[in-house]
Amino acid sequence: MAELRPILYSFRRCPYAIRARLALAAAGLQPGVDLELREVSLKAKPPELLEASAKGTVPVLQIGEPVLDSQVLDESLAIMHWALERGDPHGWCTGWSAADRATMAALIAENDGHFKHHLDRFKYPERYPGEALGAHHLAGLAILRRWNQRLELGGWLLGDRPSLVDWALLPFVRQFRLADPTGFDAEPQIGALQAWLGRFLAGPELAAVCGEPWAERAVWRSPSWLYHLALRPEWQVARADGEYRRSTRGRSLEEVGFMHLSNAHQVGGTAATFFGDLAGDELVLLTVDRQRLREAGLEVRLEQANGGELFPHLYGPLPVEAVVRAEPWRC
Ligand SMILES: N[C@@H](CCC(=O)N[C@@H](CS)C(=O)NCC(=O)O)C(=O)O
Image (tube, rainbow, N blue to C red; front, side, top):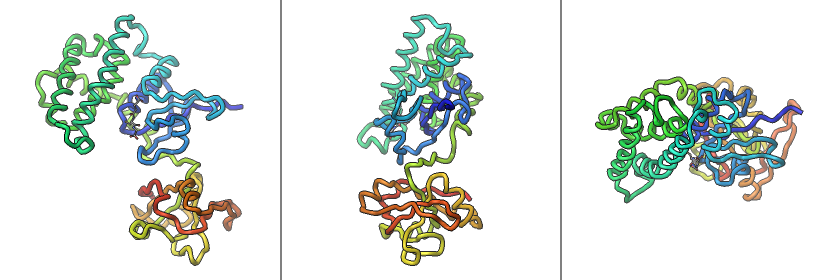
């Protein structure tokens, strides 16, 4: 039997997922070859991710047969270590003393703890009403100044070559800068840190893991969900009405008797067959949660379409609450 590839659930912009992808890429692993990458939306997490790890954070690496005998790594650092145990050609983890490794652990704990705490409150003030944004900015900067002192010595946090800790922290410092790039670049007393981040931003490692195939624009389509392509204006009307009743292009639920849906692997074919003439952003792909249909007392039957292929048919209107995601479909 062919060996199953590990599955990585990832989110393009998440700094934890970026650090995991950096380590996996550094170890020489490639999506599509050594692992299956599933880009997810944090607003609509696929059931497979939640089954693997109920805490619902990314990144998650699932190794082995799901359910039966799978090992699940749902902490970014664990994924980094797993990757680097497979290959560490750049010496991120190897060649460092026990004292260095203790310093790495302490710096990562400070990043994931205090620094992340202040970063979130500085970057997303709307999520933390009543918190003083300025105070969190200053507290974050105080940590960065300390890291800067280390970086002044040899350009990297542990000396003159990069280690695991540089790659583990850089995605978070990048986020701190992104909250106010002009202010960050003009900030005094962090020259070595600005140069360290600058090298990361311009380097090939970050570019590789923020582009395809490490970071897909399209979200992975879970086979647990059902799909429907809708014309944008018709979907907008449905959102206001609370239910969607267009069975397929140009035909209503009343005319057809059921709503046409697709399985994950059938969406591309459906788009080409029925909407191939459309361009731009006229189409919206709806992702439908079967469980919510069941809860609404609605039945889905697998039935043959004209070509003999089985398609899911929904007997009743599609409730807007059963749609977990609506995204533009690029024709
Ligand atoms: N300690 C975890 C933290 C991962 C984490 O918090 N990831 C964020 C995204 S950047 C997440 O998945 N949040 C869940 C959500 O937003 O629903 C790790 O190191 O992997």
